[in-house]
Amino acid sequence: MKRLRWTFFILFIASCTETKQVTNFTKIASKHKVLALLPADARFILNTDDKEIIPKEQIDDSEVKLSFMIQDELYKWFQKNKKQYQITLLDIKKTNEMLFSKGMTFGQFKQLSKDTLAKILGVDAVVFCNVNLSKKYSEKEYNTYLAFGVGLLFVGSKFKVVTQMGIVEKFSPVVLWQKEYLPLGKTEEDIFGILRRMLKMAAVDFPYKK
Image (cartoon, rainbow, N blue to C red; front, side, top):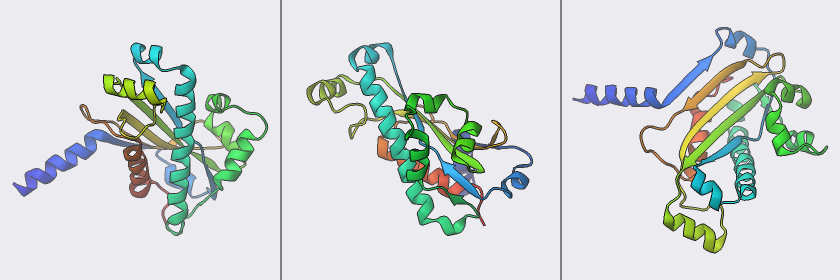
C-alpha cells in the first residue's frame, strides 16, 4: 500500500511539473559567471466579462507590481542561499536601473528578446520567469473590487496559475534550461502561494549548484 502511495505521489509531481534543458547545458553553464534576474512577466488572463468591469489600467498596474514582487522575492532567496551556487546574480537594483532608467517602459521590456536583455545588462545569461494567472471573478470579489478599488492583487483572490522559470544566455535566444509548473484540475492559489511556489522551484531545481 505504501509503495502505491509513493507511486501516485511521483506521478502527481510529474504531471504538474516539467523540466527541459539543452543536451550540452552543463558545458555551456560552466562558462557562466554572472547572471541577471529579470522582472517576471506576469499576466492576468481574464474572461470578457471581467475585462469589461476591471479597467485595463488596473490590470496593467497589477501585472507590473506582481512582476517586480516576484523578482524581489526570488532575489532575496538567492542572496540568502548564494553559497550554494557557482554563479553570482547581478543586484536587481542595478538590473532595473540599467533597464528602465533611460525611459524604457515595462511594455517595451517585455517585447525584447532575452538574449538582447542579457547583452544590455552585460551578463552571461538572464533568468526569466513567466506567470500566467487566470480566473473568473465571483460576484463577491466583484463587489469588493468595486467598493474598495483594491484591484486584482487583493488578499484572498485566487487564480489558476501556470509558471515558468528559464535561462537564456547572451549568445542565443534559445532557452537553455526551463522549469514549468502546470496546475491540475481546478487548483487555485493566492498571490502568496504563487510566490512560495516560485521560491520552491528555485530551491529544488535551479541549476549552477556547486
